[in-house]
Image 1 (cartoon, rainbow, N blue to C red):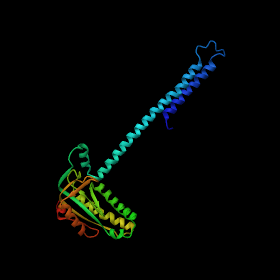
Image 2: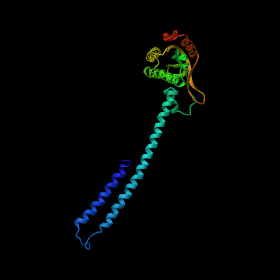
Image 3: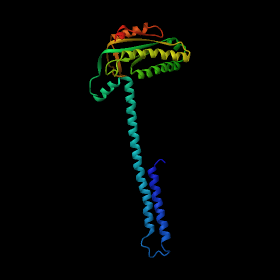
Image 4: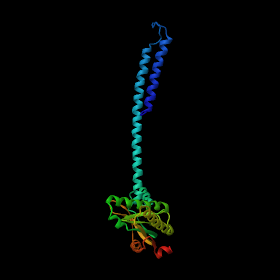
Amino acid sequence: DRYPVLSTLSTSHVVLAITLVCLDKFSQPESSGNRAFDPFIFTMIFICRSLVVPLQACLKERGFRKRYQMTHAVESTRVRIGGILETLLPPLVVEAIETNPAATVPHHHYRHATIAQSDLVGFTELASTRRPKEVVEIIGEIFGLFDALTDKYDIYKVETVGDAYIAGQAEKPLTIRNSPLLVARFAASMVEAVHAWSQDRTEAVSCRVGVHSGECVGGIVGNEMQRYHLFGNLMTELEVLESTAPRGRVQLSEACMQA
């Protein structure tokens, strides 16, 4: 029932009114001259209550429902916005902004960052033979696999540029854990995931990854479509490692192996 309170109260008061009329009808003699009360008055009282009380309950219940719907909508929106923010910024940075919204735009210097950058070899050739919708679906599938790996290895997804996927770890607030070994394992898993995807889809696409360790700077850039970016020689050298990595392999820098 849409309004259970309304139905319950309405039914109970009508039943009481009918019961009172029946009791009075069968318990009193035919002559009405000596009756101590007029059953009509009590019947009308109960009938009126059976209308007024449910109406009040109906209005109150509608108010409760509307208030709940508004509260639920606000909470759902807050959760969705929080989820979107966490895809654009490191979770610890989001917490800092929520705690102190008036603070300056956050920026951080990382001394021990390890970042991986991947490239999909053969994707450009594949995309040239497919419709735009298919290209988006393919890159979405592969990057979806990478996203699952970031959760598995506690890696922060920095950004995607074309078919390049950049992610890694560093000191807080970029990530809670900071392990070059985990980033290397993440890179190897990226290669394996694309290999399995290619075999399943019978496509000639593979993955190569460069991994580098060192210092970099992170911060929010721009006024619109803001997200957290990393800058420095680390990122420049990382591109070289990725572009020179053998097809289907992970190329680690000397700094990464010594980290």
